[in-house]
Length: 299
Image (cartoon, rainbow, N blue to C red):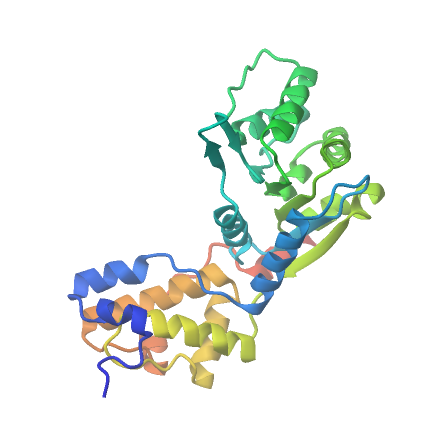
């Protein structure tokens, strides 16, 4: 019988390591694919090769904080990295990513975009000069997609600032003739919906919290096979699955932290696996504000 056959072959060597090394490996961030994320990634790949037209299709990716939006964005950037052409001395960047500034105004937005393009920001420049610089650089670098994270920050501005920023997004989509991809919480959808012309261009893709269903079973099975534990865990048992959902509220980053805590405790205690008893004995800190409380505070 193969040693540690419950662990995926590529991770079995990790299970042979000393305890502290295995604890370190448990804490290393791992990417686990699942159907909804793969669908979004496939759609982003389609948008990247979309031919230029007057009204480019755009995508809004929204969901709770920690659900996995940023990981999807980083995967797209890894798959389509910037490249420096030695022969021409030009850096090409098919995917440009930035964050909406915390206090959204047009000047801050263009300064953030210039920073994402790794271009010097001259704070004395007017909005018009910054706008021209961004437009010229995006074209010069061959940008085929602009990704704007934390779009819900739009709502932190005044009504006038929100209108200006929505106009800015529409202007960029028109002028650059490339898809815009906006990511944020459900508030991001509410912000974009206030501009009908902009909303008509965006299709919405929600990353909903996990439920105790077949996709969640597959997710846990993949995660379990990556853990460097020396005994088979029981993450797929119905009571364990439900406890994980209850404790994490179905948020991906909380699920990962919970399983990480359980795996580390299993190594330190010598138990070497995770089961229903593990969930009843390990203290798992609750999030500062649960989703239910968050929803109540919004009403």
